[in-house]
Amino acid sequence: MQVEFRASQRCSLGVEVEFGLVDSASGALVSAAPAVLEAMADRHRDADLPRVKAELYQCTLEAITGICDTVAEAREDLSATIGEIREIAGPMGVDLISAGLHPFSEWQAQRQSEGERYDAIVQRVQWPARRLVTHGVHFHVGVRSAEASIQVTNAMATLLPLFVALSASSPFWHGFDTGLQSARTKIFEALPTTGVPPAIADWAEFESFMTSLINSGAITTIREVWWDIRPHPDFGTVELRMCDAMPTLTEVSALAALAQCSVARFSELIDRGHRLPGQRDWVLHENKWRAARYGLDAALVVDTKGTTRPITTVIEETVEELMPYARRLDCVTELEDIHRIIDVGPSASRQRAVYEQTGSLEVVVTALRHELAADDPGGFRPEGRG
Image 1 (spheres, helix red, strand yellow):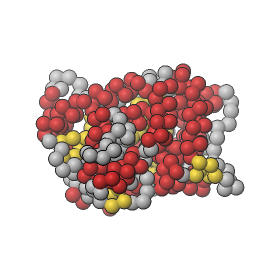
Image 2 (image 1 turned 180 degrees about the vertical axis):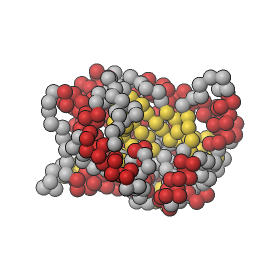
Image 3 (image 1 turned 90 degrees about the vertical axis):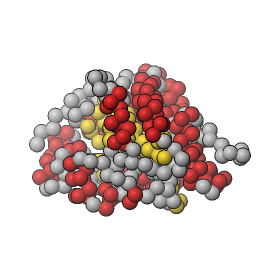
Image 4 (image 1 turned 120 degrees about the vertical axis):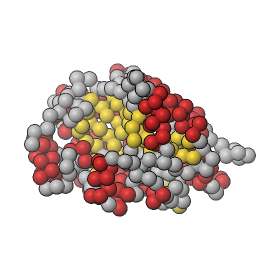
């Protein structure tokens, strides 16, 4: 089959953020998405609806930006959408959090959203899909051609653990500490056609691969290929799907800058005729696991001999290397906020710190609500402490 790639002539940016809807009193997940979406439709009866849509479960909403030129533009878009959701959800006794997993609500208690597509996914995948009460962030960055999208996807896989570690926000699940920084990563990997993308030589091989998946019944549409990084033919982008949802727009924006600058750099290297970086399959999988398990405390494998380096060192060197692209794309401030995440720790570490101080996962949810509302990573202090 032929797959048309609608190429982007600029390094555009789009961001998709999934939010958990929680009861304002208890902090537990609530199935409020249909009511919020209905109220939004009433508010925008004679105009375009805001960029909000349902997800697999009714306790989740996804905010989607338009096609943006800069990270600041994407942030402003998301901020406006979040504000409108809050205006509608607040009087319903509903608030928002943004984290890979809810710390204590159980997936069995959540209501599935209506729709044939959702029904088909759950019917085919069964238990792994039923427990998919997870929240992530996706970044779309425009690339100029189908062939470039394949090369960039392969190269971006080498940076995958950096995004996993910096965004890690899912240490708790069903009321217990998983021991991981990003448990959402492992839950999502249980679905078919997920995880580290396979190395693909060119666009012709990608088309052949998609044909094989569809002919075999593994998928019904290429939208069901949920790799951590994938070409998105309809949008003309490379899509990064590996990140946990993050509690603050500061963190989302920092990772958006990292995504946009990295794709811009690899695209420029292609134009200059350079060979893009790559790693052996086992190294890619091992490093992703280490990032999900240890977060910013991970030591990454950097060669086939097994040499390791601290992930924070790799991140800091990567940020420095990307600064010329950040200046060109007007996102220096946002890229520099990567250092702030390293300083205060990713959300998973902050959540554990709150739990160690209070012994309460309900307070952890309160911290997540506070950080999103205040846009202040690490700014929550339990009452009477610190």
